[in-house]
Length: 231
Image (tube, rainbow, N blue to C red):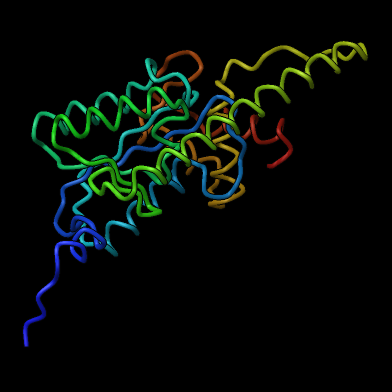
């Protein structure tokens, strides 16, 4: 017997995901911590699992190593959105909404852009810009992410001031972006990759070396891990 759903029941279920073509987007910030689930590799793995479980066609994944409040520098996100809006895909998928942005104005602009151009913003926690009932929850998540970013920034500034007041030498800045350092540490501590495997993955992702070279060397990775105490 066929069950006929009311409009309210169909709206409660939300729009279907099956068969959507999606482009994944992963991001770590310049202040990223090497905590489980935030590395580029971990984000990609979670998106692949989510797509497999929900019958989504993951076409590719783009990446950024940039603060979530610097939308103008999210070139990986811009590339993904350009591809989607040219008709190559139907949705942008992120591990969590704060990977797409941590700025409330940018989030509002992103949702408006998705609605205007007919694509969807999805995350692995089942947020979906195509489901009106999800919008309030999405706004709350973005607001919480923005507040967390503000607190992290405050703690960092306070820590640097305290260290300077105590006469500590903060040392020569590394030539490697802090976000990439955090990602390398995550690859080692979370994924258990060797220095050689990490160098290979960074090359595959397309991240530039400190000297804007085309290839990472395992010796560079090994020295970094030793300096960070995770070799």
